[in-house]
Length: 225
Ligand SMILES: Nc1ncnc2c1ncn2[C@@H]1O[C@H](COP(=O)(O)OP(=O)(O)OP(=O)(O)O)[C@@H](O)[C@H]1O
Ligand SMILES: O=C(O)c1ccc[n+]([C@@H]2O[C@H](COP(=O)([O-])O)[C@@H](O)[C@H]2O)c1
Image (cartoon, rainbow, N blue to C red):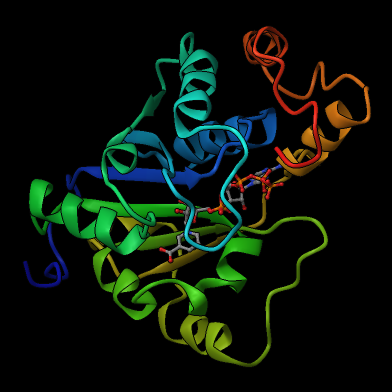
């Protein structure tokens, strides 16, 4: 399928995706996804767990367990959906493959926004076929404490060409980058894993049911996970 066409009706369906390793999912992810959905008026917000993350060491916890924790976290939140498509693909998980697949499924008119933290945007030039991403979807980037918007380099150039405001996400199916300054909870999965590995509790940083799952399955007891 070719790149989606540009202008068209304001009644266009708007789908948002929030991808991650979710090892484990925590309130930082969930609040960000929910706030973006509500504040930007997406019709759907799908959380997309990656199977075999492309640019990090293989997680010590299986894709199935990461998916199960995410499913538990979303059970009582109809506003957030789980999209398992990446778990069904073998080999390294590349976002561009997911977006090509979605475009083939949904057609060229639906607006697709791929949401990420600023830390992820800074690494974008290392992603597989990264220049194609912006032809297939919008990027919604939430600034994260401790991370600065770059002034030069490939990401700065990408921003200069594609930066747009929120209304553009509905006006076009793809091609815009929206930078959102949003208060993010200072929680990271790395922090949660190291708390547990050092014998401390991650309670109140993630949903209670996810905490129960981690305890039942004895996850993250060792630093390697
Ligand atoms: N506290 C947070 N608030 C909002 N977004 C977050 C937060 N933590 C991570 N993200 C974003 O969520 C997406 C998936 O992140 P990921 O699953 O790697 O979580 P993480 O907490 O950063 O994990 P790790 O510490 O293992 O790197 C990324 O786009 C990342 O920028
Ligand atoms: O496609 C790639 O090359 C690529 C490289 C790094 C990260 N991503 C995607 O970015 C999202 C956040 O990744 P992570 O590793 O921070 O959890 C997740 O959906 C990954 O699949 C994608």
